[in-house]
Length: 79
Length: 436
Ligand code: SF4
Ligand code: SF4
Image (cartoon, rainbow over all chains, first blue to last red):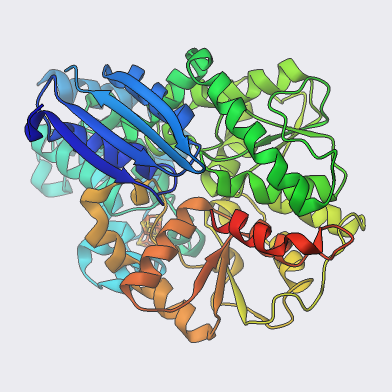
């Protein structure tokens, strides 16, 4: 996958509501169909990101806890 | 007239009632409010006065409701709303007014400029020119209420993962971090972040409270949009949850607008009073202290500490002495900022501003009076009982090189807990938990 279709975002250390804000801003910079892979440290993202994806009409591809205080998720821009 | 303008004017007309009409009609143009506003204090220009902000909406009001405004608009300073002026008004209401209400408290006629700015925010939201991010955050919160199944299990799993830490810190092997536990006396509503979950969990456990955690967060971005429809849907998640669980009390995280909204505004959205009390975590901690349910070291916080009154907690919410009583109980070198309490200066982060990166530069400039105030206290720790304020104070700290720590009330209380309440061996774990 080319760089243009996959953006990596580090949201670690950010507190509510900044992970969602930064993700939404980054989403605007990528083309429809492209994905963002993000890492965050706050467990709040497990609730915020799925709800944001659904309400904004984007796709949450995966969301996993990969380590203590580390969550990784992949979202795809659909519109 | 475009659809956008027609929608905005429709919202404006529907909001017209005694309070808004009074604000639109009684201003004496004395200018006393100017000095009350932190934007004006930071940059003393005409456009930074509350009266100028109100005047922008008054021009529209005169064009619609003043006979002379229709036939000789230039004579009475009337201006028909169009898309350009609506966009300008919206920009002012969302970026140059934090709805802090300090001008209203200082106006000899009590002119409610923030009410006018809320009217503009409502018009802008309905017309589709409100900041996208606030709309997005409000809609995501509403979605959480509609589809809790998309995150419930994973969220509960994360909370269960925090229990060993809670047990180790409190030394209480029975300590639990339950979510939506039926039969609990208290429903605690945190923010989306473990920093607002673990310290209160430690305090509730130490105080022997019968509590459970809400699935939702206290923040309500519908309030910043001045959109009662969205605000009510966001609040309804908590109201329904509390009713369903049958709790006696809803305790809200240290979050100013969430408190002012759920405690004072929301009952009117739902047509009356709630079958539960709504209190802030700070009030709850103060009550525990009065009841002797927390054993705190009165000298625990040795550095100089000051308290920033969140506008929503103090001016709008009336929570003023509670945090001070708590801080005086643990910090011998507690000092006040000047002015404080009802007269406190806004930090510049309210009204949803901290969530809007497009206005960051303006927000930091408008926060300069607060930064100067903090510096004058000589404090090393600044406590605020509001997440928006803490985020703004953190930014001011970095931007103006204040070299202070920003803390919530609950964080300092956990720091001051004595071994009877806390497992002494777990101090490092506790520190890490608070920092996380
Ligand atoms: S202090 Fe009140 S009356 Fe005087 S200009 Fe300001 S809003 Fe108008
Ligand atoms: S509410 Fe606060 S920010 Fe808004 S005009 Fe009045 S003093 Fe200024």
